[in-house]
Amino acid sequence: MKGEIRQDITTGTWVIFAPGRGERPSDFPGGEPSSTRAADYDPDCPFCPGNEDQIPPILAETPSGDGPGWQTRVIPNKYPILSPDGGGRGRSEGFFPRLPNRGRHEIIIESPRHNLDLDQMDLPDLARVLETWRDRCRAIRSETPKLVPVIFRNRGPGAGTSLLHPHTQLIAAAVPPPRLIRREETARTYYQQRRSCLYCDLLAAEEAETSRTLPAGEGLAAFIPFAASGPFETWIIPRGHRPDFADTGSEEILRLAGTLREILLRLKRILGVFSYNLVLSPPFPSPDSRPFSHWHLRILPRLTTAAGFEFETGIPVNPNLPEEDAGRLRRGES
Ligand SMILES: [Zn+2]
Ligand SMILES: [Zn+2]
Image 1 (cartoon, rainbow, N blue to C red):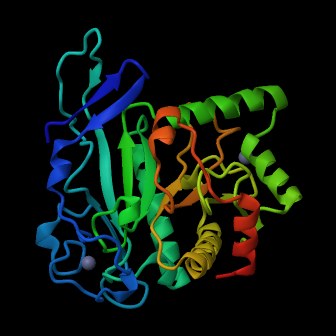
Image 2 (cartoon, rainbow, N blue to C red):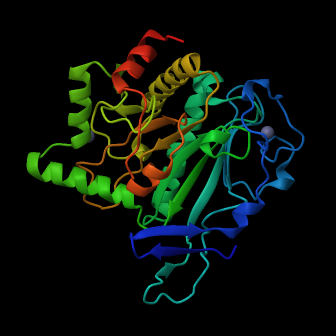
């Protein structure tokens, strides 16, 4: 892959160029089908068992909880946006700053079953998916400590996925992620002023306010944030101060699995089968950020399309009020 990372000097934004991505196959040439209508197994799917000749060598695997075989599998992305050896080593000069596109791009196959989406899994199986996320974060932290692993899930063509078989992705880029750095600066300033974690205080304030809170398992909080960027954006966050998801224990992961599944099922009752992005926040990059870095999971249903105003200004327009979305989710109203 001959990609590279270039900087737009008018905004400071880094752009990843990944020419090979255009060769990806797509399960969604005609838009959104329902994954519940798909078959259990697809002989042409590279993520289904028996088609290992279509995928790169497996990086990690967890055994099935009930018999032979595997439950989750981790592979390098066959069409990566970044690669471990990088590329594009052209010179950086003047108006044209550039970096090699070095980093990791992995796929976590969540189940051998072609049609088993997260919200339909048994809790122990869903917990195993979340443990795989945690274990990959740990692996990146020990193998390439300077890279920031971003775990995300694109469900449905409206959220940018090209393959139906349920999977999560991990991208760890060498380039500094601007939004993460901005969040770190905000949390650092708050901590310097109050000696307290912004996220711990925010979730306490959301719980005191109650109008946007949702049911969550022990030790967790869930809510639609005050300034949700789109309809039904939902956060799940641990109540105690937890800087890094990589340190999460198995009991906590099982409770997280229960809360995540419950919220996805409630959303589905209201929205039907829907496209969404799910993002797990990585720890802030600075080594001294543990007192104010606090992991959280965000579910972002893709019900609106960003248009000219949003692109130009960076100001999202949300047609739904968070309090009303939270009320509907709490009542389970369809
Ligand atoms: Zn499949
Ligand atoms: Zn905290």
